[in-house]
Image 1: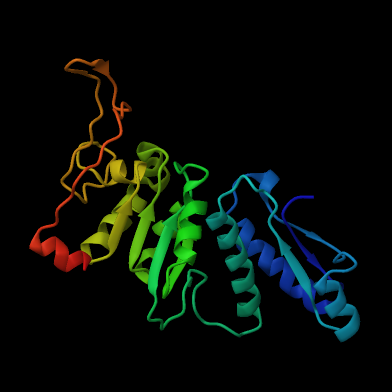
Image 2: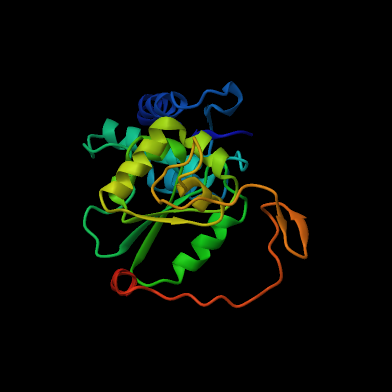
Length: 249
């Protein structure tokens, strides 16, 4: 069974479900991954109980392609719910709303789409959950192209491949990230995310004037090593300027 809307029988669902499917399937190019309508919610599910006990027009929204990043699956759910609430005349905003309009929390966007390694976003979720007054959301390239970064204070780009992250964002997405930083938004680049932010590639964002080491060189008493050579473990002392201390607290 693939991604689907599983609804209870009824006239209300007969009107609403096609609108929900149209909204989400318009964004899916692979025919095999388009959502379909199935009936009836499985016995023991809350949707089944709500329909049988309360007479509610209930349904289950299911995205089952686990190979897709969480941001994409969440976006598909937002599109379906937004289509339903619009049909019911309960909302007049766009489907791109990801955070409360008013919050004192630090709003963090975690990029989890093309070019990102498998564990990075999950580990960031774990760390961010332990931080007080912080609201984190997964975002994908399509979200960024659609302007969601305006809702956030900081964006985190994890490890993986900087060039593949840039390709997934494409020119429009990269411009959106650049504009976000220019407006004062924070940017945290981890490994590949730092390559993405650099200034020495045709695909990099150029939001920092640093250049990454990307060649093979001869190291004294060691030999010829590539960019991946880490060398022995050592302690590195880092000092902040007065301006840096003011920014970082």
